Image (cartoon, rainbow, N blue to C red):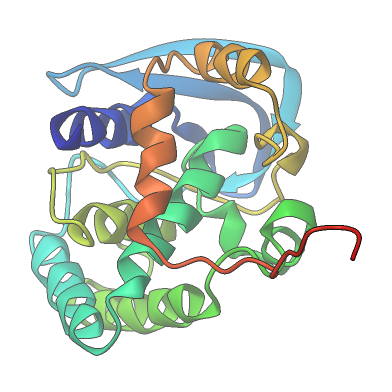
Length: 221
């Protein structure tokens, strides 16, 4: 199961990346990264989004992996639940409209299925890591979307994530996130739409965290 989970996280990270230019509304392009990291692009004419082109993929900051891994490792020593927190935030970010860090926007973070569902410490830690990356690499050298992707991978430390994402300035459509009450056929349909066939592996990733439930008791005397 662990091997399948690694493959699922890698595919999720590579599948959906929104590309646009600085403050320019455009029809978004979905970049599907192959194993060779070559991108094939397909246009979606139904939705226009505004994103910021903050990061040039051909000129990566070589310190990013080290900075992010160190920050996540130090946090993990204090609270290992934040590993699950990063995975959940990353999944919620990627599944709706691509890995564009839009979940970090106030409108997304506090909305619907995300409210009280994603760990607040993850957002705080993202701001701390971004400050460290900006100090080492320069302001706007690396996108928040890439930082979040690397942090999610470095949490369980299972894979290397290709970089080159762009940050969104607009909230995503959280209605596309799977409902916790969704039936299996509905979940399979949603995953298929994103080219994913690893429902069990990705859903199982939630079990690395901690959960609570309300006590129940039988009806009657």
